[in-house]
Image 1 (cartoon, rainbow, N blue to C red):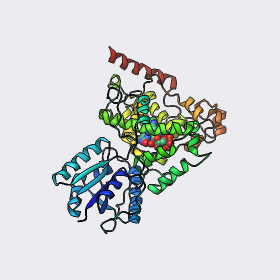
Image 2: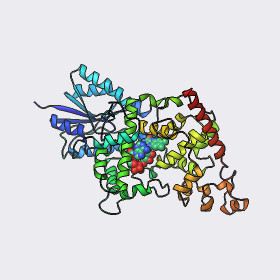
Image 3: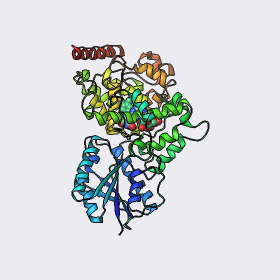
Image 4: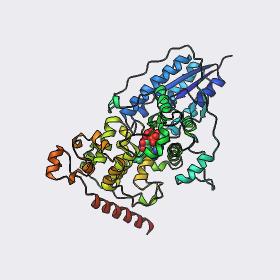
Length: 471
Ligand SMILES: Cc1cc2nc3c(=O)[nH]c(=O)nc-3n(C[C@H](O)[C@H](O)[C@H](O)COP(=O)(O)OP(=O)(O)OC[C@H]3O[C@@H](n4cnc5c(N)ncnc54)[C@H](O)[C@@H]3O)c2cc1C
């Protein structure tokens, strides 16, 4: 008697190195792939047209990969706990295979689906695939979660890994043609400046990043990764976010000699560290990881928030970062740190407002990585450094955008400004402003806060919060 299995795709929109798909093919004669347009993800807490559009296009690319192998993608709409069991009933599937999801929403959703399937005697099987090591797989010597990256990374390096899987040559479907994929709203970013969605494009990005022999970009990663103007990072974050490439494959291909490869692999491990933190402490989604900063006072200043969001703070590197985000749905990692530090320390605004703005625009927006990055920068998270670190936007700009090309790319008002003043244009004399075609306060804003004053204010507020917590 022939048996049927469902493979329900979510953040794993690929056919290469896909344990759930491989397991389904080993178990069943007929495999029905399905994707659910889940209203909770399309709108939900973090509505994000860039991400939804990228996901929609990646689902379309997946449908093409599946069809080429013999299976039509079923596309369902509604609550997974309703529509997945209904599909199992309709097709007579005995089993549903998924890639294990670690997000708080994904865990709740999967529990509900598993309960509904178990009630009708259908198997629910979650396989690994979104991490090299699952967020709950590693523990310290006291069998507790890690709280700093160093120890986590040592355990991550030492833990055994599963074998990489190849893409199946054929997927025996049920003969039904693929369902149409619904249209979604266009991205708010410029589509021409966004990465091409879908697994084939992501694999091409991976291949270009980790080339063979000398001169492959990953080899220079340690030296160049912080350079805002050069943009020499992998640009794989949205691909890892939607599972267009498997992190195990990325790491397996990247590992090798040299600082570039070592540091790159370590950055991929940061993604898993933050997933580990979110798994063990889901409270960090709404509160500071460090108890001392749970009640950190924040200012209410809608005008400052708006200036930050629109890239009108008067600090060129901050404004370039924020405008890059709006235009492309992406922001360089160093720029994310500078922009997040500016919101939380210089402006003393609520970290959650920044986090939400990033999630609204980032194509790679991921609850755990975004939250980890914001808490790290705001000094409320796992970073063992004290809160005294307040990024100086002028020095950061001079160090990581030495010629000012990043600023000129995203802040056209400053294109005529000489390199020596590109990161502190308010210091230009009237004659220099005239020569640059940029009048401060008219063509480009004067700084909305003074760095030294803002730094002192932040240190006082953080210091008081810390003292109150230890009193
Ligand atoms: C405030 C803030 C918010 C952030 N929000 C997100 C987010 O929502 N989604 C997201 O994927 N990354 C986030 N990051 C991490 C990082 O900025 C991006 O992963 C990186 O810029 C993506 O570019 P890339 O793919 O070229 O990275 P590369 O430098 O090439 O790194 C390779 C991969 O490692 C992972 N990675 C690298 N750095 C980090 C890090 N610090 N934390 C977690 N993972 C990392 C990413 O998956 C990335 O694709 C955030 C960082 C900060 C400071």
